[in-house]
Image 1 (tube, rainbow, N blue to C red):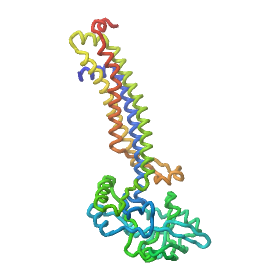
Image 2: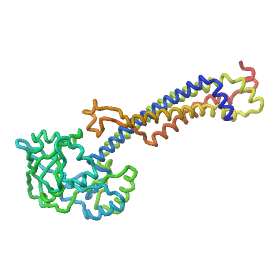
Image 3: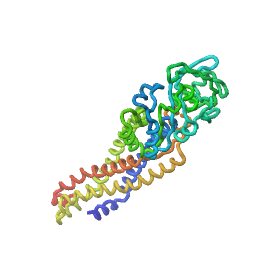
Image 4: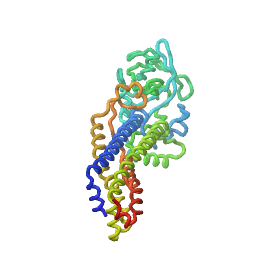
Length: 402
């Protein structure tokens, strides 16, 4: 049956080649679009985690939605020991509260975030976002880093003094004058406006929180995110909240899932076109060989075997198109993974979504496999009607068909 299907396919090589080319072109286009889509989404998710959020954050229970200086991480040593045991070594301690920042003439409320300079650079890339000046360098220096919008609103530049007014652990007012050493320009509104970063050690002294932290930020590879989260939740108990990046920022994950749903709709449309092309080819081939089918049935070929041959012929066309399409599609993804697609002209409007100016294509294995299997399934579905037509033929009438 396979041999006959192959001969039938190459009997009209031009028509088969056109069908295979159409399948290959459609599949290659789908693979490239998935590569662009996955490149955009993976870049957004990586940047969100690597710039400041981290893959996982550990807080005292209820801290994320109702942050207070008094809600410190209980027994932080236990948490840190457990993280090291789980292989999560890229971590950083932070202290978070609210403060009023004042320049010479204006003031603004913001989040005051204490970071350990060395640990933070091992866990996130926030230091790389400093556009003017430098990042904090010493854990106890009286220095601060502001977002671009905040610095503009306060009318300050690197080298100027900024006064911070906040509460200490006892509820008393604490005020300090810090030198602005750097300005961050990330394109993300939540970082560029409403955030001030100061050395963790200095903030602990300022607020009377020596040796205490409000959050522990962990950076993990994608494949370790779920198992490490499960282990932390199981071992730490209800006094802690262990949040993955998408627990804290669900909109990002929902946006990715929504866009993927649109791509699956587009995939369905392309599959209908591919199936129609294959069905047209197989049906034409079947109609041209009605006399031949009649002779085969008269010689003892069963109806099921005849229908199976038609299905195999369609599947061969689909497989040939898949092989060619996968090769071309992956070559395109590979090329643009290295060369990238420059979107710098749109950077002003897309930077806030944690995108880089140049998008490098990459494709998730699941999306590639889903697309290939869908095309093969379309090839099988396309053969159903021609196979039914062939199986319903009457030998005598088919033999006399002209």
